Length: 115
Length: 111
Image (cartoon, rainbow over all chains, first blue to last red; front, side, top):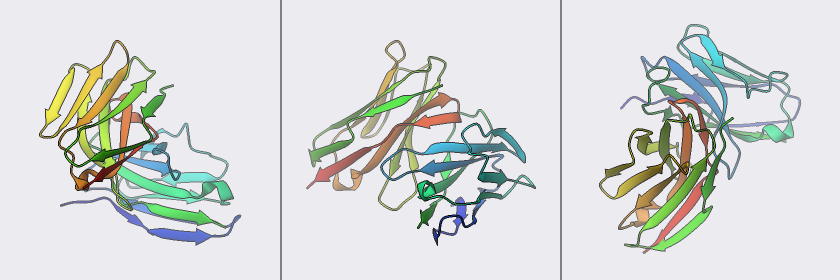
């Protein structure tokens, strides 16, 4: 069964350092999402891509976060500089197409700890 | 924007009993309401979803009801089993765009 792949699974960094997370969606899925899940809370959408284009990044803290999906396939989420409050699980998800009331397939996530 | 509230935050039931989790949403334009189950250390997985043109949907022991007028929807699990223990998230949105998730309900099913 096809799955969304994410790496690294765990990342520990010191504040002010740069971190990057990678996501490879299910093959053929045009829409890719990055969510942040703080412990004890629900996932919060950071950015949504349709192919290589950003369709929603209204909740992305653009002063320190950036995301790209250059070829419309895999994606990278970067944080620079990391802050203590960025400690969370970063979940990538994909779906077949935008606006489809179908399933979001989540990856296993990248857990970030900022010291 | 959309706001989703979920209750209760924790729920403990005896095996075989029923469990009900409730969510309310604020955006009357929301038309898609999925429920995700997240086991400890694992990814969220869709267990059931409902669209705004349907009032109820059932899949074996799981059912979801939607009241568009009151803007609330509920997850019902009957004949609970220990493997149902997990965190359950509701979500609401316009299709899968900008899905807003609730804060989660930790369900514990005791044998």
